[in-house]
Image (tube, helix red, strand yellow):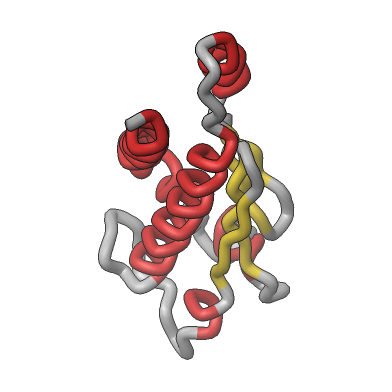
Length: 130
């Protein structure tokens, strides 16, 4: 699930609760594995956004001073990762204005990363079960 906010992009993984309930019945606890996976996913998407801003992905390069790319960070919890920028002009670059075309660095990076995020989560859960 992808959620956009003014300066942040949040993604959550649906279906985790169902898997947790099933594994709890089997006496497995995957909370730590999911938290580790969400941290890895956030860091991965953070890197993808930075690469996008630098022009190394499909989006147009948005790099003058490097301030925007340097301001991209991530944080995570048990079932959510947030990738964000704290610079005041980040929303204008992402969503565009009447004079600035849409950058879509955050949104496109999340879309491109969906498969990798799934892989990270599967791998961590698998590792915790072995």
